[in-house]
Image (cartoon, rainbow, N blue to C red):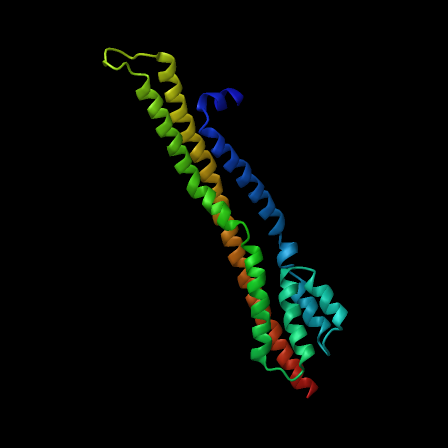
Length: 211
């Protein structure tokens, strides 16, 4: 590996930095976007059962808010109804939508950086290719009578090919994982929206029962 880096020349170092950063972002997103941390499958049913007859106590709502992203959205609706029992469905929905926007921003964190790496890596590879071409042309003798410096020619070819390949090696996985995480976040956001609507209907039913 060290010999490849040496053959690729100094233009490879920005690509290595991009690869390390992309790997760190991918690992971080895998950890942060676990289903158990975002939208536990049984959480909505547990909330509906716990509030079947009355709203949960404030400490239970606070615990719900810290449990997951879905819990944070549901807790915002419960808080809105608890703080103002006469609040309309629209006010409760607005509270959950505000919490949902905060959650959405957190779920999409670093995805832009990963997409940027996927876009920039081929350009950095192209830059390395151009540097290699300059090395190749620099190896030619001024009079055009021969190859000139074979070592410089080989170095130029190595720089051009290795940087092109490494740029694609960094860009392709980054693009794949960006699309994967993007689809995963979109799925989570849809689940949060549907869960919020179910809770809103449940709270409306509960209010009519209490009245």
